[in-house]
Amino acid sequence: MRSILFTLAAATALTACGTTTADDAATTQTAGATAPIADPSNPLGAPSYMTMAASSDQFEIQSSQLALQASQNPTVQSFARLLIAHHQATSANLLQAAQSAGLTPPPPALLPPEQQLLDQLRAAGTGPAFDQAFKTTQTTSHQMALQLHQNYANGGDVPALRQVAATAVPIVQQHLTQAQTLNVDMMQQPGAAGTTGTTPMDTAPVRSGERG
Image (tube, rainbow, N blue to C red; front, side, top):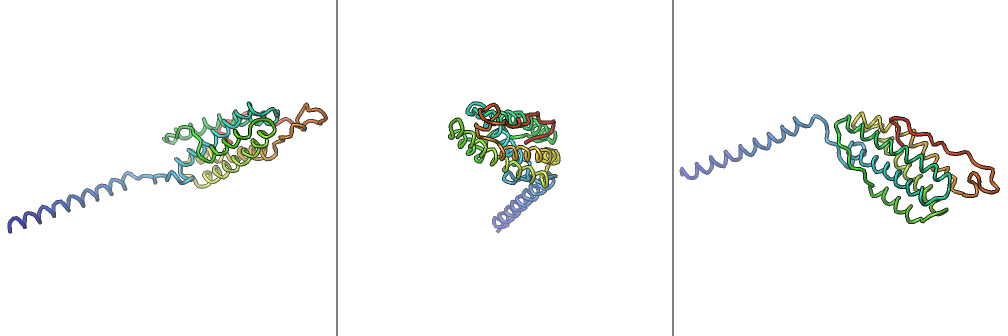
């Protein structure tokens, strides 16, 4: 009888300890959760936004560096130089905003959608075929980036990053328009025989805080 009573007492004590531990863990989690933890798969959460924005920048830089090697089209090369300058600056702006918010941005890397676009561009070879592929992939990538920045600017969870996104929107829109109207016909380039010339593309560097 004493053995049974001892066993029941021990079981009760263990149950109480387990309940206290679970309650303490729940209390600790609630107390420590001063802000919701962003879901990495949620584009309105800082981790996902930073990863996607960094990937977008990396695609623009790498694809434009490739354009400087594979294209002989002056307009394509001019646009590529513009994109490199802008996106190197915007990557720095993203890093600065993340650090000001106490966040650690992910290392720059291409996500599958941008990697697929870059692979398509590399497969296009050189010359006119590359120029057309560059126009197509830049249009697609900037449509993706525009949606990303617009959504985060309207509902993102970190104010410093929302400001980065809001500043990015008009720049990305400008790049998208330029990509959609990019002249990839060599016969229409400035200096080509029998042409009337075209207006050179604006290559002014991005202002502080702008991204595209």
